[in-house]
Image 1 (tube, rainbow, N blue to C red):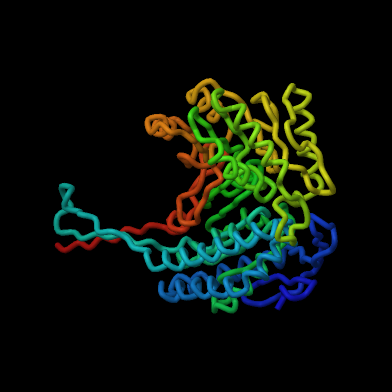
Image 2 (image 1 turned 30 degrees about the vertical axis):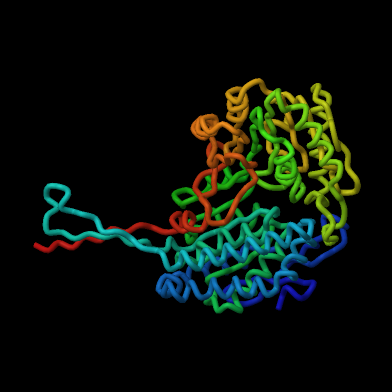
Length: 478
């Protein structure tokens, strides 16, 4: 059982395989060694893809109830081992334990949703006689598995975002080659063991670790892989799109998500929610609240209360249940974030809270009056940094939200239903949250963005649609 030992193994064709070379995995918080991780070579990557390719027929023929049963068993097993999974998350990702537990709970739901969707795959009857010449014909559609899916996942939600790839893939009858983020492979090996124990056929899931330029490029370009689903940075995502050829590609590429706060909003009711949206998981969330546009009538009150709440957050060891903010994923990310804060300060912005680091922990940072061209405003900061700017009208705020390369989700707090509907129409994003932060997500809703935030949709039902091919069947009764 590879997850119980310090030296991990690749999971290929239903077997745990010793790697040819290994790298050291360290804690982002303590820098202590957690495990030795195998770096797959070309032969091992090829074996994993071939295993998935050979298992395609088995998975395609598997009855829906059997696929659903496997996913249900995975959900049960994960729930039983929830504390163990949360501890792994906290160690490898420096995710505060309270948020790690929440991720485990969401992941259990994700696999349950996938089990349900496995039994809902159906086509439709087509009324052929609606067209001249279509008389005496009966037609229907089916949805068939697309084949081998290459899944490339990030570090920030290494358990649940893996589930958003594996759950719909297995539900639809596909096979998977999974490459997890280099910093967070342990949760993927843990997940592979759950699927093994749940009775998934050999080859249906293969987990290989290593550098993106080696493992990722091979998955993206290999002709045996039929689809690539990727969550990560826009730069890498665009590269995948360019290399994938005719493969189907789903990309979730992040954002600099914003919320608008209209006049007459009760500020006391939304502060805690906005704090969570900005600083949970150290701001390392694709829909983290990064930009706030507050109406001038409530701006001063919002800033005062938000800064006060920010300074009360508990920083420390991710394994401490009291910790709310811990280390960023790498020291390099701390340095990058500090340089962006310095740029903002040099550009005339005010640092109202934070702006400094302690070890690998960046203090939650609040920046006021930041120009829209500063990195903290126009790029994805992926750190506990939030920018708060004053606006005169909601229309002005909408223009500022839309003035972005990204468009994943946006929120607006307002007491005016007409303003809410107008914002829903005008905001150019994949999801609009009325009276909530953009950081809200549940696991069965359609989730994805526009512009450089990506293409395609996650959310189990919608991901299953992405991972299947429609086939039309026509019977001529003449």
